[in-house]
Image 1 (cartoon, rainbow, N blue to C red):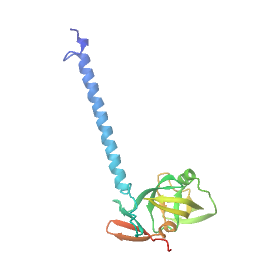
Image 2: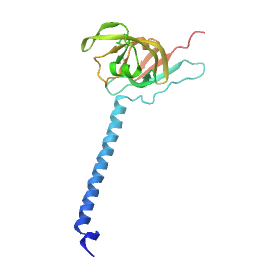
Image 3: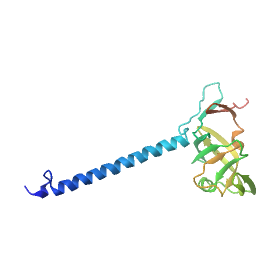
Image 4: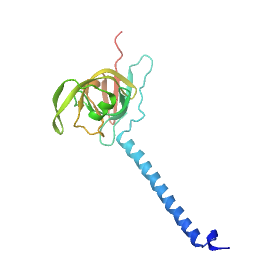
Length: 183
């Protein structure tokens, strides 16, 4: 038997074993990185699978959990384009980063100045025909497009949307109740 046939202790068998060990380590590290990414995403947005509680005869409710930084974040969409929302009761209007506004096809209407935590910026008025988060659907929501926001920033879900709900905070949860239309 020659040394090239893979007998125990042969040079080619040792190289193959080391190669397999390196591959196993790479796969293990990739799996750990993926698991960490999932954990980190859930830390930022614990409401990825939030859904409306809609019982007959009762107003629709959405219960959100606070993230580890004290914010309420929820997935949704603007004009059926995916978006992530950060609830912001201090914002007068829904505020959309420029990149998300472009993907959603939001028109720029009037221009104005807005005061933000980072100073005064130029923003553009717009109207969102359909805004959805956690199964709640809102129509014709006044908003602004903020070109100064990063592509990674969540849409700020301000009072132009939130005023349509009764808000109740208890410990680390926020319940949004959409009153039934009078009829």
